[in-house]
Image (cartoon, rainbow, N blue to C red; front, side, top):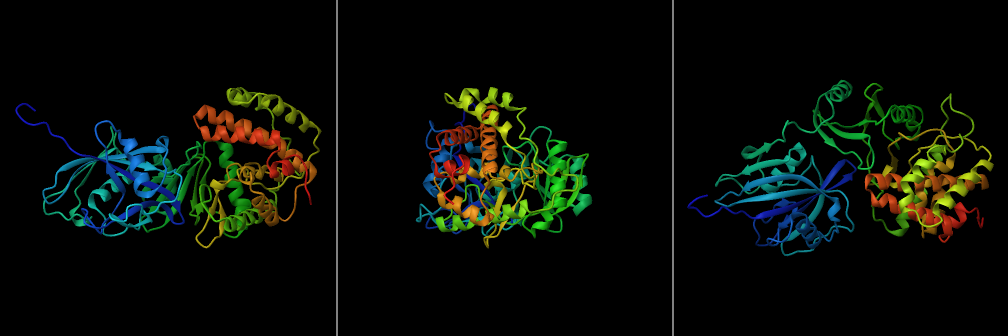
Length: 475
């Protein structure tokens, strides 16, 4: 810029904190208060980069804790969209970096009451008013799936969002387009439920199957799932057709399925995942009693006509491969322990096969506003021993004897000696598999969960492990 001062702009960071609510994804917003700019308007939690030596991710983590009390790991911060903005009334331009965060610790609350007088969660389809136009532009660009947007307001434009004065200009990535499933999947979905006006990718980070939230032109909402393989597709479709419908509304309803696309359309299920939910101890006990009751209902479901009468032998064919992937993270003696447990499984008698969920863990259990429990994700469902559905719940009982008691009180019976022995085998195999998968995909939480499980099984230190896994039961 020869002969002129170099143009500089402030740099903002904005938190798009997203959680799953009873009516779909929800975003955290706060209302500005006091003498600040745009007082009375809702916006994302935001702030400025603190000098030339702070990067935008560090700034977001700092501002998030300062304003909400939420602790965010920098590795959980995802780029959402960058917005080049100019404020109305002669305001200057600025650049805003909007970041999506779906994992954190803590509960959000108002930390700066002088500049914020309210904070709440809102669905994307029921946003509060008035909302800062700059913030709303960032949200709309994020939902559109573009990497960048320009939002240059005119001097007479209002501060708050006004659909009649929409200055948002989306800047698509090379190749353009808004994220959505493949054309064939879109056409399949619209044949089943009518025209879809918005697609949102809500896939779980640890699975290869894709899940989309589909907003219909008439206001309806469905979920569309594309399975990663034929086996997952067949198992989920079978479960939805054969036994999930018998749970009395505790699971989704299958609307349509296409084996060639490995795709299904499901009704929505009210509730938020129990994973990461903070509840008082007495409420936790009620929840785990309800989990036990729901598990018992699943296991009491009629087997498909062609299902075997006894559970298949626990598959060990992948043990060597899993040990190879897990070995760098195993403690001394872990591998020998795993092999000894697996070898002992040959002495176990067959046990009765029953309907199982196959991946019963807190992320697949939803709690509605009235406390009703619901369940999703049936791609691992198949006739197995009942203990298969307990493996991934055991971690919840570590140090929580009361939750263990509540679960089995709801379940209605205790495990037999043979089931306890088989549970030990299933647990150590699941732990090794988790360590190997977590190591391969760079997921330290999975690795540590597997290491923790092996330590618990070996030491028997936790009350639930010594009783449930090692066979003791005071009753």
